[in-house]
Image (cartoon, rainbow, N blue to C red; front, side, top):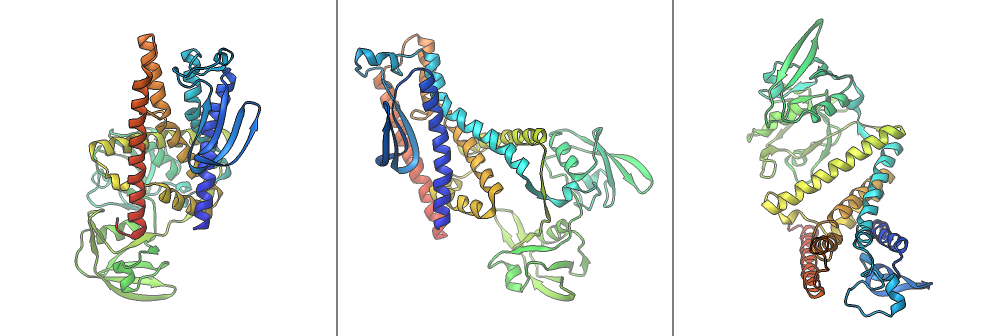
Length: 430
């Protein structure tokens, strides 16, 4: 618990500081006076004043703010203060000041993601191995194309494939398109065309059916299976791949005989799979033991991979937002401070790379979400500036105030909702 709280404070502290620092620095560069620079909201618990600015840490850590001179156009100011008033600056400077917070969060993510790749990330060990097919899902797209276990993949759509990582990248770059695999089987070479469908490709690297983790209370645990066990056969049928184990279980509601190797001894376990409504298949509650290896990248490759990671995370965010709007995802999946604290605590205990990955992920999300055109967020201010630019005069201050009050109410409601979700998860009711 203590580690989770400390990790939460560090993560939020860094992200909020970077965000508000963006507003602060650009405001100063644009000649705007800054009265307060606060990490957190509410009563101040530590503060000092330097020149015209009071720097403070406030009680509630979930945010921060920069209070500038003349933020409101209706604010009465002495004549000498108008030169450093925010509302009296050209619209271009106001836009730069408001957008700077999100810009800094995005920049932080774009620095951290490449750094993570340079420090080194753990990747599945098979990605660096030759692309020899270890298993083909029966009746899957690869199987229908004629690909078999033991085939060596030479290229896909003309792109050379030297290792499994190349194959994963090449397939990802060919969405919604038929793929022509050039294969080598023994001494023969031939082409196989995989027709584009919504199904998974059904093509796997060699993976032994070794149990990595057994879920508490699952059929596998009740039967006596343990981490490290190797499944050799099910109902007398040989199992030589993890995907073969999964396929043998997923549509089988009846009790099955598992032949398992534990050390140098063979055991038999009778296990009845249990239907999982989320997965829509039968499961016994085991996870694959993935062999991982640490991989470090050079500067230019790390930058490329880091930017690609940032792009994929951004696309995922918009997909989730769309899913929430159209009802594809449940709002019960949203997490709040407790979930962030739990994840931050786990990340801190998992090592520097995992912790930095979480910080980069959250920083990017914060930067993008803050640009959404919602009153009270930075994007809401930018929306009003856009209206002002089109109309040629500022939006009525009363309209802005009402819109921001609505925005605050929405954020409070969202905060209560995600906190309620957190409480339900902690109590085990979600």
